[in-house]
Image (cartoon, rainbow, N blue to C red):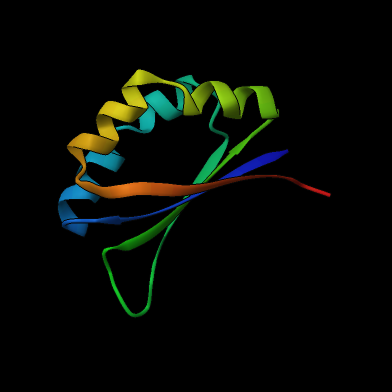
Length: 89
C-alpha cells in the first residue's frame, strides 16, 4: 500500500473543496483506493490530503496527470505543495 500526502494552502477552502469533490471520479479511475482531507486547526485554508494506492507506480502515475494539475490550479492552490510518498510497513 502506498500513501501520498499533499500539503498546501488554498485561497478559499469552500471553493477548493467543491473542485476536490468534483474530482472523485478521476481519482477512482486512476487508482485512488481511499482519500482523506485534513484542515489545520489554526488555518482552515492549510490543507493536507492523503490518497492511498495499491502500488507506488499507480501513485506516481496519478501525480503526473495533467487533469490533476489543472484541478489544483482551478481549486486555488497557493504556491507549491509539499508532497511525500510512503509505503505501509
